[in-house]
Image 1 (cartoon, helix red, strand yellow):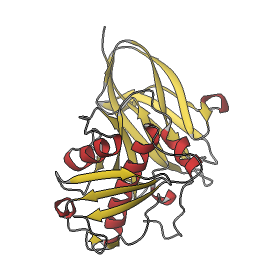
Image 2: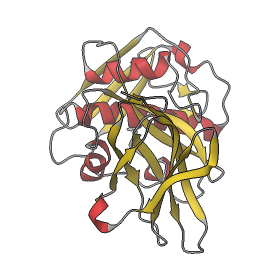
Image 3: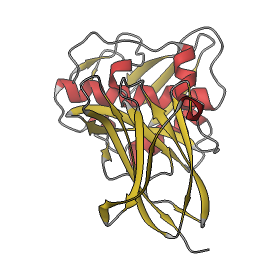
Length: 265
């Protein structure tokens, strides 16, 4: 985990991260490792409607696994969950104690709580529930109480905000892992930090990653804010797409990969 002081995200920064889905799907964050550090990644999922978008995303996070096998979650399934949101963008989440069954280190516990914070605020943003002007925060309760510690480590007697240091430096939004597309052009999209040596991509055969089909570097006309986009025309096959940055030393950083299929029809 990063040893630097946590940086919170403003409402505007939250919006830039969460407005890059063209689908009416629920955002869910997962944990994953990149460059030897634990970080947070997001997938968009088709989740059963639980009556409000925040509960829908959080219940999916507690009860399911990510599509991408490189991602994971320390949370346990728990049926007891309630959410609400106030006019000042405070999201209250009340989760049953069964969700906190995992035995985690203090660092893992902080990341798990941030996974919930990111998921709840993403669901609020993408569904239009956040009011303008105030960055969202989360008030987390366990069985209705704030005097308990999440995973026996994280103090809940304070508002919880996104820690900007814990989100992954690069993640691919589309195509998602395991998806299948009809033959023709697809659009590679995602989110990335600014890298001194640029942001790069390649598509290779999934079963033989050394067999590169096409590759390139994102230019200014292919990025907007923190998002990236590239149109790809691929023949039928099973592919691995990779996106990574190059840091000031010339080293590869932030690699994210996805497997997907282009069908013959």
